[in-house]
Length: 170
Image 1 (cartoon, rainbow, N blue to C red):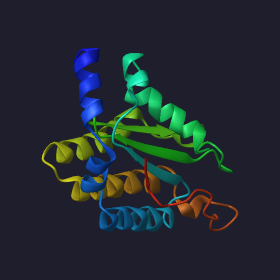
Image 2 (image 1 turned 180 degrees about the horizontal axis):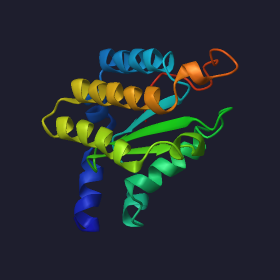
Image 3 (image 1 turned 45 degrees about the vertical axis):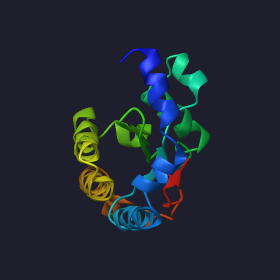
Image 4 (image 1 turned 90 degrees about the horizontal axis):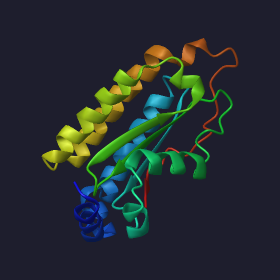
């Protein structure tokens, strides 16, 4: 897609689109499944949904991956005791899901696992199934994190919740 087509796609994808795709009931279900997963693994998961990028970012060629990196920093997802933060970033205009894991997780989990979660979500999104696809992707993510970063390996007992489980709709 050329940058003008992409700019148009971002210009017409509004916060209203985000609220329609992710209504409050879906956001509550996302929060619950993140909390449930964090009882079984030591990672800290944060989900951020962004309907679109601002046009300056689009015209400058910012990718969804680059934006996810910015948000990973801005929301201090890296700032956990075991370097175990995981960001799931959803960009509706680009139809992209990006996962960025801090180094404590990234050294254990292959990119193929993250790509499988992203594919689960984007495949469902293409059919308009935002609620189910997001929850299915989070269940898949939780299973991966439980396998590679289980709660039972913690020598300090249950970890306190270091990042909010509440999804963010920008």
